Amino acid sequence: MALLMEHQFRQLPADRQVETRPFLEAVSNLPPFFDCLGSTIFAPIKADICGNITKIKAVYDTNPGRYKTLQMILEAEKEMHGSEWPQVGATLALMWLKRGLRFIQVFLQSLADGEKDDSNPNLIRVNITKAYEIALKRYHGWFVQQLFKAALYAAPYKSDFLKALSKGREVKEEECLEKIRKFLINFSATMDAVYDIFNRMNADLDYKV
Image (tube, rainbow, N blue to C red; front, side):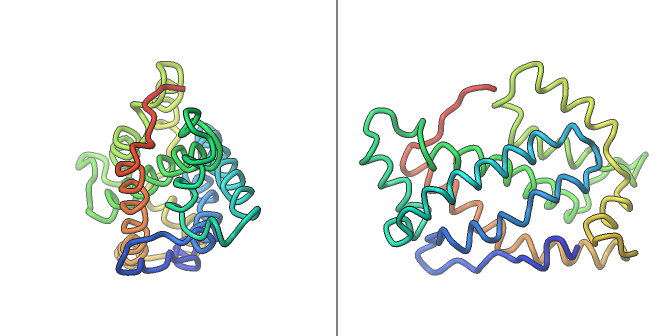
């Protein structure tokens, strides 16, 4: 659990604007989450998240004042790129990043809510499948979907996953789940705010990879 709790997301202000620098600092600590899932098949999602964080940071670093919030980035790039937007720049990177982060959010929320396979309660396939179907499946072609199915069978037991999330320390399941619930408060609020920005600005693209 240390993996999550050491790098909490900030509470959003009343206007629900997501400041870019703290957002990037928080999400930069999330890629190791996929190592806890144990399968190299999750490596492409991890690499995708890392790459998109790098792209957004590169844009932010050119003018931190102009790009203080994520919405300011989208608005500036829309004005800058015209008809090419939103298929360019940090906007496109954030579009894919939010999907990978939504996978993490739904998966953790499913665990925290106690959703499980009653016949195999120590498996996490139910939780991973729900997260994939909600966050990523519609954007993946047949081949990538088959890779994901293979990854399911390599997923660790829940007890091993929670131990990995706690950086190898032995943890009580309910204590760990309670910490996940605390982490999800600001993380989920941030993700909802990012999705709202894309909805308001009609910036989402619906194509498969």
